[in-house]
Amino acid sequence: MVTVEVRGVDGLTVLAPVGAPTVLDPVPGVGVLVLEVSGGHLTWDLFGDSVVPAAVLEDPAAAQDWLWALYGEAAAVAVADGVDGPLDAEPADPGQAEDARRLAYAHWAARWWPASTLDGIAALDPGLLDAEIAELTAACDALVDGADAVVAASVEVPARAEDYALAAGDGVREGMVLRRGSTGWAWHRCPPGVVDASEQALTWESVRQGGSGVLRVDVVAAPRTVPVLVPAHLRPWVRVGELRAPLDAAADRWVTTLATPEGAEPELFVPGVGSAQPDSAADRVRVREFARARLSGAGSLLRAESAAAADDSDF
Image 1 (spheres, helix red, strand yellow):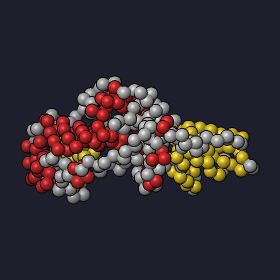
Image 2 (image 1 turned 180 degrees about the vertical axis):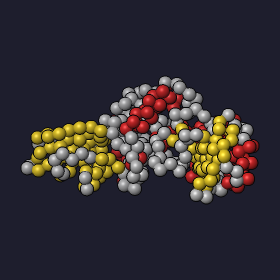
Image 3 (image 1 turned 60 degrees about the vertical axis):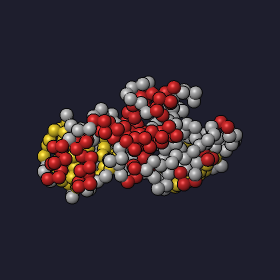
């Protein structure tokens, strides 16, 4: 049983355990599970174990079809009567509550799973993931609505990077290296399956060449991704101060060289993707630790996670 606070906020009805994330939070976290449902949105903490979510309802009447299942009859009555205040919530249908959280987790894994060759975190098979999302969506048919009622088709990448012999960026490098470094990138700014999730995925070196400053950028592609097959609108760009430039596809990475003032450092992004508020390196570290624990067998795994745990051929 969980204590849930029921309150009205700007014409919305909110049911939230103390400290639980909601879609009203100003900065979305990479450790938040989100599910669009009939009448509103549900959220869970990735790192928590409670099946009782926080809910933000735009249409409380539409939510009556499932509120009792996830929160119990008392919560459903309180929302119907417009009563604010704390109440004890316990799912009347624990199986439905488990399925809802698992569906939200599967959607999270499709977006945020930190696949990394550099960090040894295997990628999840998108076919297995989509199939399980479809099954869970059917199991939650009284609950889901909108975008999460439809299983999005995955971008198929049928070949391995090493099957391609592209040589972009592999030429002889000239010039005096002044500085070099490596860094991570804000996961919010790039779609899944494009860039390795490691904090060392992006490497750069500032070079003095021909009397001017040149910045060479090299970014490791996501596991099992062939950069040349990634659609143009999903390919990463780099920002250096006010300068923005696309990265070129190489065999298993993204590369570019651009003229820029000495000392500048690059940021990775995909145009039109993500929010202005970046996730933090600490958040990303915590997600990686979570993923490693999952691959070691912690929790009730998705089929895609079980397959990834059993197959370490990439690493």
